Length: 458
Image (tube, rainbow, N blue to C red):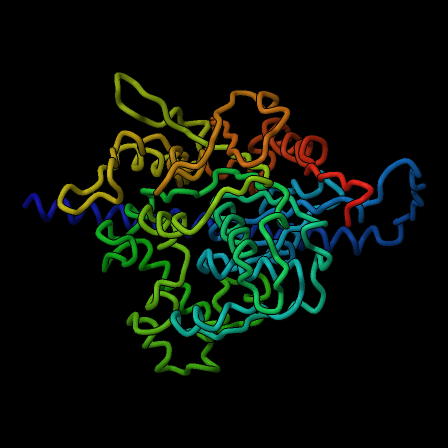
C-alpha cells in the first residue's frame, strides 16, 4: 500500500511537472510569435513615417570596431540571435553595448559540441567536431557553415569578453581549454589568451542535484531512469527533429542536426531506433544533461584550468534561506512560479545512501541552497575535483583593481531565470546587473603587455 502511494505521488509529480514545463514553453514560444507579428504590423503601418537621422561621429570616441566583442552565451534550452524572431534570451541586454554578439548554439547538445560551434561562429568556416569525438559519439564530423565569422580577427591580440548564463559559462571554459590545447585543426596558434574575461551568470561549474530529480541516475550520472521528465523530453526532441519541419526548425532548433535524425535521412526505422534508445545523442551520452550532473562536471573540470592572464567573475544566485536550521524557499512572490517547487525540491533533496557519493566529502547540506535549477555551491567557482583560486565579494567594487587568474564571486538573491527572457520581471536589478558587467568589461579589464626594450626584437 505504501509503495503504491509513493508511485502514485511520483506519477502525479511527473504529470504536473510536465504540464508546467509545456505551458511555460508554449508561453515563451507564443510571446516570441506575438512580438514578431506586432513588429511586422508596426513596420507595415508606420513605414511611410520613418525618417532617417544622420549621427555625427565623435572623433574623440573609439569606433565600434576597436572594441573587443562581448559574447553572450546562452544556457540549456536557450537560443541566440536569429532564433525565436526578435525575442531575446538575455532580455535585450545585448542592446546595452555597441559590440555584443549573441550566438545561437545547440540548446541541448553537449558542452563539448557547443564549444566547437562557438569557435567557428566567431572565426568562421565549417564546424568541425573532431574526428575522434564524432566517431565515438556517432554523429557527423562536420556541422553548419559560417560563411563569414562574426569576429574573424579573433586572436591573442584581439581577445574577447565572454558572458555565460548557466551551462553557457561552462561552454566558455571548455572553449578556452580547447584554445590552450590547440584543439582546432588548421589553427595552430590558438592560446588561452584569446579569452580576455569570463563572467558567469548562475554558471553551472560543478553540476546540479536538479539533474537527479529530473531523471538522471545518481549511480553514474550518465543514464536516465526509465520513467522521468527527461525521458519525456527525449521523446519530444526526437519527434521534433525527425519531423524536420523547416519553418519550426528555423524558429527553434535543439541543435542535433549533426546526428542526422531527420526522416529524410533515417526513415521510419531510424525513428524507432532513436525512440528505443539505440541511436542518437542519448545512446552515446553526447548531450547536455550528463555534463550537468556532479559526476559529469567533475569529469569536465578535471581537464580544465583557470588561466593566469584571464579575468574571471561569477554571480551565484540563490532563492533559499534557513528557518530553524531547515533550508526553504526564501519567499513566494520573488520566485518564478515555474521554479518555486523546484527550489523546494532541491532544498529537500538527499543523495541516495545506497549508492556511492559523487565525490569524497559530499554533504547534502552543502547543496541545499539553490535557485531552482542549480545549487549555489556549484555557481561560485570551479571547486571539483580541485578548488580553483577564488575570492568572495559583497559589492562589485570590492574586487577593483581586478586581478587575473582569480574567480571573484558574488551571491545574489535571485532565481535561475531572473536575468534572462523577461527584463521587466527583474526591473532595476536587471539593469544594474548588466550595466556592472559591461562597465567592468569596458573600463576595468585590461591585459598588461610587457614593454619591449630598444635592443630587443619585438
